[in-house]
Length: 339
Image 1 (cartoon, helix red, strand yellow):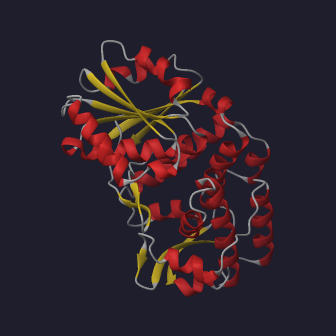
Image 2 (cartoon, rainbow, N blue to C red):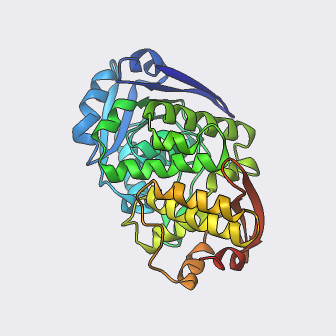
């Protein structure tokens, strides 16, 4: 077991373990109130809900199941769920548990942050992507028609519990999606290297990813500076994700987005040709096709709705090589020129 302490606006701990044996000592005492709402999806519910319910000794547990997939992370699902919580009698002293991947985590954390102006929240991520990224750092949100994660809050959890054994149930595509976020860390911090990706130890990669993100969030919780580094590959990636109508996973689109960030970095003179070639070979380790099926104009149109946009400019994360990120405000046309 590994415990990672996060000293953000609210201090909390991330527990990384094999199994749920330490849940009762690490998390159960931190769950607020006697009433718990477990929000999960129809893929995860049959696999893990019963075990989580059995661990919540002495609590009255309500279960809420959404359809798996990004299409559920919308305003309609949000309103439906908060109405259901209210009808079930959850109070300000209750807790929401998000049991699932990134969609469930973003949605359930947003609900916890806004229901009665904020109640308890515990994250139990079940996908590799949510384990290494979205379950930690306090970003919550849902998608709007105009773009991804345009409605949300900053809201730190009371605890995060990661059972690494759950990775065994993930298919190759889900593992690749998580790998995309892990590969991102290699471009912004030297604690994860290309050799780590070639010789995968998931426990080690999860811990390293979380420690990198923890350190960045502690320096810049509200994303006014260094936290923008975590957006490497995401500005183009989110646009690609929307254009594919979310038929590709978030991580797959981030990998494509990193490819175009690398190309932009080279074209604008921030990265040498040697480093560009090394970076592209590294991204190919994911097995994801790096090109996309959309024109520059289509991608630019969606990129301009990104929440980081400022008119015709955007704070974009470039790369000078592995562990050498660069945040620079540029015109969208500068980024799109390399696509």
